Amino acid sequence: MKHQKNHFLNLVNLRCPDPIIRIRNKLREIKFNETILIYSDDPSTKRDIPKLCCFMGHTLIHCYLNVIPYKYLLKKGKKI
Image 1 (cartoon, rainbow, N blue to C red):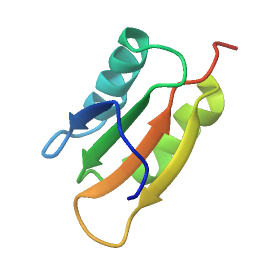
Image 2: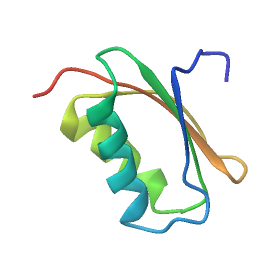
Image 3: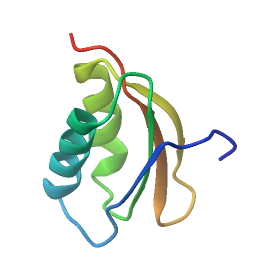
Image 4: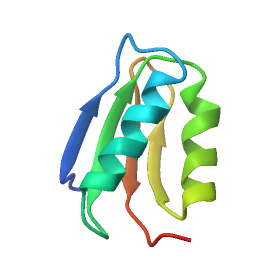
């Protein structure tokens, strides 16, 4: 991943719903347009993180799902 991260979340060994809860909490803490690099090994995050971004108005800049841990780069958007 070539994009710069502002924050990092290591969610390896956490299972649904914990990864999404921790991502939502972190998104509440950070500023608009800041980014979070997320590592996760929970297969449900491949579905849940894109849905969270779509629902909450955040941007999924990049996801790398070829190897575990999965890597996601999110950018905080405006509240809907």
